[in-house]
Image (cartoon, rainbow, N blue to C red; front, side):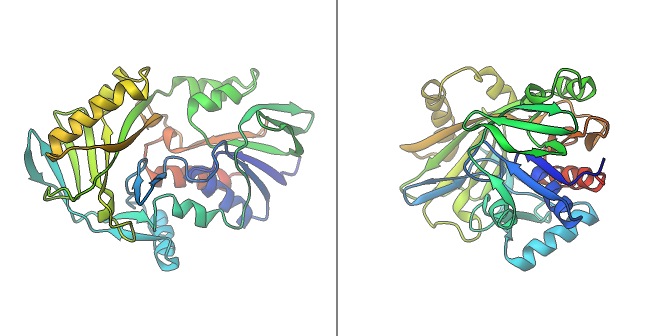
Length: 323
């Protein structure tokens, strides 16, 4: 059977990459996302005159193929290098790290890259796909908001975290279910701090040890950001796992206290976010999975490594296998 119309659930970088690859091959692609905007964990929070990237903080490019993609984004003005000073921070001691690594960010916000990339795509936002059903040679999708989606599809791609993908995979497709069930994802509690005055720490980002946090960063040090001082502080997986079932009102005082201890300044305006599926703990040996008999596939950074490059490569490689 010829594959023509493909549904992709998820508009993170894996889903977007897969869609671009398929569109370039002449396929029809429709994307769905429960969020109101694309990007997944490439996410930015806006609050009054402040803004902060509270998901992915930056990305790097190691493979030659992804380097070529990144160079094209640079040329188009979708991203810029982040030249902030990055250090290691432990018990108030600062240690230099390798700052020769080129780090990139979307501009003017981290999620801007995804917005640029989906501009010419058919995307259905605020559609929480809750069921996919195989009917003869087609797939039928259902969303919580709309019920049955009008179109039918020749193939379905799940570009979402493994727990969410497992909930959608029909019972008879055990190979994909097993892959999803064996992958463990780690959470991340994140504090977004909006400061009235500048924090005078001699760095713009830090890998943190001996603290609830594993990373803190000055968002306004990134290119084309608001000048107002804002910081993102991301808790380590162990701490986040310990407090995964706590409410924001219970966790925020703990996050704020730990943040104030590092920066030496009161934090009076803040928000928090729990990323339940932030980082893969037990990856697979596959960059993607495609069940050609059932015409369903999965892709995502969680299959290999929790990086933007892994997500993009996973989606691209899956797209290239669909004829």
